[in-house]
Image (cartoon, rainbow, N blue to C red):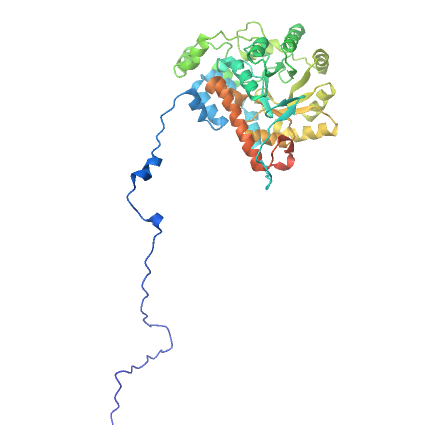
Length: 443
């Protein structure tokens, strides 16, 4: 009998039960459904209209300055608009400029430590300095030859400070007189910076004029026994007033506005000094007294009845000594790096000095300058114990970039920086800043 297979029955393969070599029907790939927002379409005119907002180009000074969001951007503007010699006089420092680079690096080598869940809906930047309120915790430092940087010079600086509610300091080497600054900013808080000369009678005359003009603070600078080696000035043949050489004439062709302003305003002179012609270093070396001692500081304390501040402190020991000799405040400063290269950095020195003066139960104000290029730098200094800060180059960059409006812009940028930084730190007022908000990083 022959066996036959039912055609409906198929034999299982030898490897039955295994998934190998088993052909399975493929599942269809599901169709991708795009969200409506991702489907391409022809744009409608009504969709394009809100995007087509072409602004009319603005070339005014106000518009140009408004585009600057940082002090560095103001510096770039200043460099384009100012001849090399005046710009380098502002921008440069002594010898290899190591001190200036380190001072700026010091502010970068920190870590902010923010607090969260604080009410920072209103930030109060007011502070008291030397017995009076300042709307912002910084003022304008004394700068020499300021009308050489831009023709509005000290007038722009003092008026901008008056409008902002902060102190302005006029330098002995200023190009506007004590009386003219008082007239230009009658409601401002004006301070006067003094270099003690070998001729004490001339120094006394300046002190009396400052008091009569309403200056409430005398700031004596003590770090200029001799002039620092400012090599940029040497290379540029920097003189007071600027000399018209082939180089400067060629340089002027790229900065006609500066030269037009310079030549059509009152000649540049030292308003507090006799007319002088020569290099900056020669002036300092011939006029300022390398024999100054603490006895001279005692004489100043007896002579000046207002607040007395000593600028140029670079050690803890000297900070203590000047306070013992009657100073109401000190300024930690290495002259913007323009005197001794490789000098101590004020920001690094700050914690030691504040700790030492607190241990002495001193009420002297501690201020600092050098290296400040943002409001965050000022916040860091306040957190580490400074009562106040002074800006020099930052203000001059604004001045060179746009005169009085440029100085206003400098102050606006720093104020905005400070307000934002404090809010992000969780701090609503200056008095609440403390060392816990800043950590110094190790390089």
